[in-house]
Every structure is written in structure tokens, then in C-alpha cells.
Length: 268
Image 1: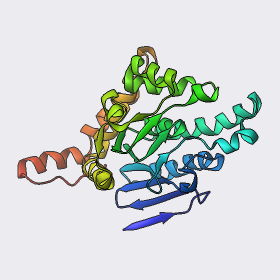
Image 2: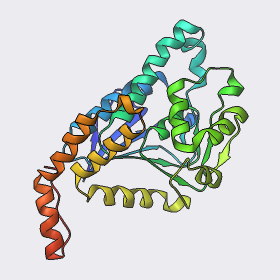
Image 3: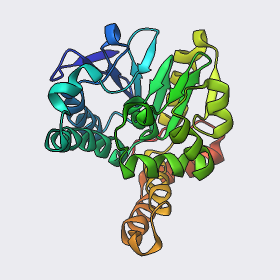
């Protein structure tokens, strides 16, 4: 059953389909370029998906068939990023959106077709998995715009593709096709454009059928592993792992294995 949700702007669509929450950038006339109101609306949608116990996976995508997100809406730069003070204000909105996506405790999938450029690539890198259509185009054009690309964005990029590919992406500012992105590790898999949505749904369903507490603990452990050793929250990790062993789902998993049936996990 599809359940649409109200959003702060018509340029964002949020809906719930069973265990999957869909966050859709709805600005196809500008290839889903992100406006200020879109950046501002992202945290609210993510928070609602976070608090909904029925939602186990979030899929992030763009409306139409031309783009995931073609970047920030440059037409707003004159009014929103014309000087350092204005850019700092703009950056607070983008950072809040990225932080919400990164801190989402459930798995997230970026479903990418067409252009995934600049801020769009930053959004995709904030998701756990990236599934791309074979028409995907990726890039960070900061060096062609003269803007300074923030450290956190570069940190995420290096964490995914490593320093050598990060240098190539940032220094050349060129666009990469889907196969190049796959080779770099920028995306997890590439499928035909006609198969993109069905592939993303299959991934989401497979994840949603697994034990939510185990998946959440795994996501937390991976996130903490990416931090410097002295900044890791070992107490939170230990608590998340202990919650798995103390859960009804652990009992259900054992029973289902012995009974040779599919487990029915409740996330508790």
C-alpha cells in the first residue's frame, strides 16, 4: 500500500510503501537541481522515516528520467551564495540535510538515473548503497565554478573511492559514466535503465526482510570504523550488539533456521 506524506515543498515527494520509505526529488524541469527549500525539507522527511518503526529502508531518487540530482540550483547562487556570509547560511541548510542522511540509522539506497552531479553526488554518497542505471553521469564541477568544496564532502568521497580517484574527480571536474563510476567504487552496481526501479526495489525488499536490529548494528559499526580510533563510540556499538542477542528476533532467527523456513523479524 502506497501512503503519500505531506512535505514542506512540492519539490520533494515522500511516500511509504510497506517497509520502504521513498524520498523523491521532484524538480524535473531543472533536472532535480536542489533549491534551498529542498535542502531545508530533507531533514524532516528523514526524521519521519526514522521514527516510523514500520519503515526499514529508505530509497532516495529523482523524478523523471533525466536526473537523480543535477547539482545545486545555480540560478539561486546570486541570491543565496553571492558572498561568504550568504554562503555560510546556505551551507547550514546543506549540512543539516547531509547530516540527517548520514545519521539515518536504517539502510538507505540511492537509486540513480541520469545526472548525479555536485550536490547530487554528495547526497548519493550520504546513502549506504548506490544503484545506477547505465545512463548515469557523475561528477563534481566545483573546479569549473570556482567554489571551495567542503571538507566533509571530500572526506566522504575519499572514504568511498580512495584518494587517487577523489583527486581525479575533483581536479578534472569532468563527468564520468556509469561504468567508470562502478570501476571506481562510486556505485555498487549498474543495471539497464529499464531495470533500475525493479532492482532497487529488490535490494530494498531483501534488506527489509532481514533482522532490523542486526542491520542497524552493522551500519553503526561501519560508520564508527570510518572514524579515528579515539573518536569511536564503543559503548554504543556494544549496546547495539547486545540488543541483537537479547531480542525476540534472535530467537525467531534460530527457530526459523531449525524449522527451515523464512524468519519473520519484528525489529524487537
